[in-house]
Image (cartoon, rainbow, N blue to C red):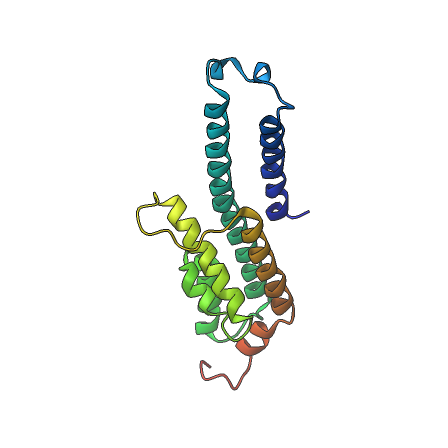
Length: 183
């Protein structure tokens, strides 16, 4: 199971616990001491807020894992490029291997236009916008919100298509083309 998919399990556990509490299966006597004295309505609101916070943190975590996996595929693809006698290409490969994780993610996603489904690329960008809104203090207007499962589906689909595309080694072939104008 991928890390992206396993993160959703924790949310589901909390959600089930919340449902049990609301349904009355979990009694107020089962509540930890530090919450003693809270009304059931207060506890329900606290659980709702906790769920929302957890979902937001999951979005941040999902995007982080997505970036790590995506950069791993990019690195592996770049490493497939043949070593060249051309100094510029050798320098370019070295530069890309040492700097690719500093690229602007939206610019990087734009590189997939025409290679992957443009709606999928747009959805990944929207997940990023929502992640950034969460991570940077929710100061601007809220972008399209995503539930963790929705974000997971979008990010996993992108990674699957990206891996399939990278497996063709199209990049290695195009960069090593002797008729390439960069030679």
